[in-house]
Image 1 (cartoon, one colour):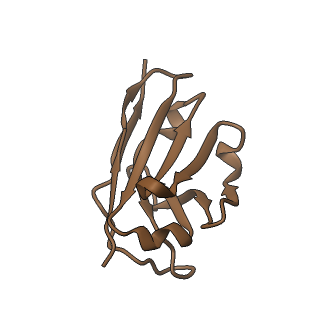
Image 2 (cartoon, rainbow, N blue to C red):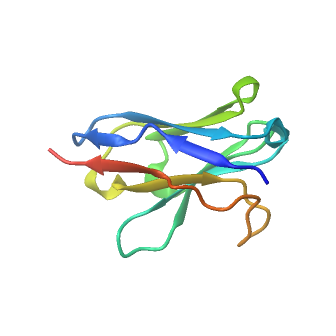
Length: 118
């Protein structure tokens, strides 16, 4: 089973930037859609952005123009560049490859914590 390892989170001031990384254990996922999700305390895990194997991207409205998802297939890694961060972006961020609307190719990893605070 493929595994994803998230990294790059941390503490950032409002208006700051972070780049998250999602490393896949298998190169086969270079041809699949990979997505970033986030979960704040008390909330459900929600989709943030996704990128297809061909590089097409999609974002939720709340992050459009601020976040950029990209992938480096040679490194089996998907990135999430996050700019103009606000308190509403604070959450644990996870990546996974959706198999369908509610199913995924991998178990959820530990995620990476993003904290936005002055």
